[in-house]
Each structure stands twice: as structure tokens, then as C-alpha cells.
Image (cartoon, rainbow, N blue to C red; front, side, top):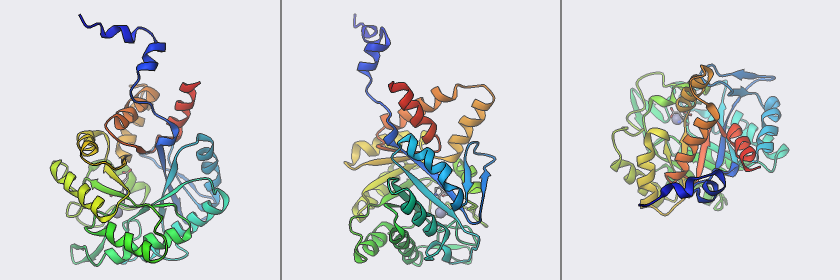
Length: 323
Ligand code: PBG
Ligand code: ZN
């Protein structure tokens, strides 16, 4: 008889046999920055998550620093929106100012910026719009401009989340031409049109004003197509590729991680966070155990980077458990 239980008999041997271990450096924490002063707005559907004005950022950045996580991912919420999303690439746009502030006061924090127009456009779509059509090629130069202006402000890495075809190549060449050949691109490559983004769209004021995102984000039924999307972003020069959302798409992540020899990120999105927080608030689940189990599953499936709203809690649990 094979006695599997020999290696499970107590925590000393279990801990030695453990194949996947979470570390605080695995995590990236999404952060919402809003225009105005003295603002710390709680997000109703994302308990524990707030929109911060720049002057209030230090209180959360201190926690980020103390948690020793890998980095943050910034989302800006502008006051002014227009059809071209001009605040996305304005020199003094909210995200550019936030990046400069963090770069100046917290030089040790690794800053990733989400590159997409939906928070900045009046119609709420991730690209330029003509009638009810979301234009692809007309959007590319704007995304490239946005990425470049954020890197000029001091961002360490750009993460395009728009799902326009060809945007990785457009951003890569804009960065290279401006002398930023060393700035990595983390592409949201297999990003599915998902109901799990609901709470985020409230937090980032980025719900589409008409229609939906199904003409650019992927059909959630398609795993094989995800491999083509990933291959094409890798080919265009992505340094890290992402699967998003996480839990319902671990099959996609696993297959992709076995197919491509490149670092993977996974985005544990707002709806996934909201479900865990709601059940935990009701006392129906044990929050710490559920979160650590979920995040371990994402890493086990092949993700190197876990983008998660649980990042600060999970980092502290990692530190706690290693003591
Ligand atoms: C912007 C963007 C979205 C998310 C990340 N970047 C929303 C969307 O595509 O509608 C979702 C993040 C989350 O739900 O936590 N394109
Ligand atoms: Zn978008």
C-alpha cells in the first residue's frame, strides 16, 4: 500500500513537502486615486477598498510599504471626461500626478499603471467610439500616448487592459522611441468579458455608457482563443502576460503557463473579492483560510504575479505564518 499519509502526519513534515508557498512579494495591490482633497471614499461593494485623493495616499502607502508586497497598480479617476479620454494622457492628469507624488515620496514602491481609456472617456468604453462602434486602430496612438506620459511621470511598468488588437506593439514602439526600452509591459492578454468586474466599475467610474465590452474583451467560453491572444501579445513584445479574472479561469492559466515560457500574472478581480468579503462578513466562511487557499491555487496554476485586493491582508498573513 502507498501510505501517502506518512508525509502528512504533522505540520513539520507537511510544511517541508509543500509545493507552493505564497510570499508577500507575489502580490500587487490595486489602488484607486481620485481628484480632490482629503478624500477617502469607501467602496460599498468592495469592503476595505477606498478611493484616495493624492494628499491622503500616504496612509495607504505606509501600509503597502510595511506589508513588503511586490508593488501597486494605479487606477486614476479624473473629474473631467470627454470622448477622447484626454485626461488619460494629460501631463497633469490625475494618474500622472499620483505617479509623480508616489515616485517622489515613496521611491521604494514599484508602480505599475493600468493603461486603458475607460475611466477617462465620457462614453465609458476602452477605445474611441464612432456611433456604436468601438474603433481599434484609432485607439492605438492614444494608448501609446497614455503609456508614455505615465512612464515619463515615473511609472515602473505599464499594463494595457483595453483589449484592442495591436496595442502591445504600439506601446512598445512608443516607449522605445522615447528612450524607455527598459520599461516592461505587462499585458492583460486573456481578458474575458466578465460579470466579475461589476464592483470595479463602481469604484473606477468606468461602466460603459451604452452596450457592453464584448466586441473587444473575450468570450468567456473560449479557452483556445485565449492561447492565441497570449501568443500574439508575446509576439508583440509583452514581458509579462495576464489572465483575468482568476478563479473561474485557472484552466486557461494552467494551460497557458504550460504552453508559454514567460512570466504570468493573474488578476483576482473585484467581483471575486466582493464574494469572499460578503460571505466572510456573514460568518459563512473563514476569510483568512479562504483567501490563502484561493491565492495558493492561482500560484499553483502557474501565476508568478497575483494582482489582488487582498494583497495587504495576505502579505501580513504570509509574514504571520512564516514566524
Ligand atoms: C479597465 C479595467 C477593468 C478592470 C481592470 N482594468 C474593468 C473593465 O475592463 O471593465 C477590472 C478589475 C476588477 O474588476 O477588479 N479596462
Ligand atoms: Zn478599459
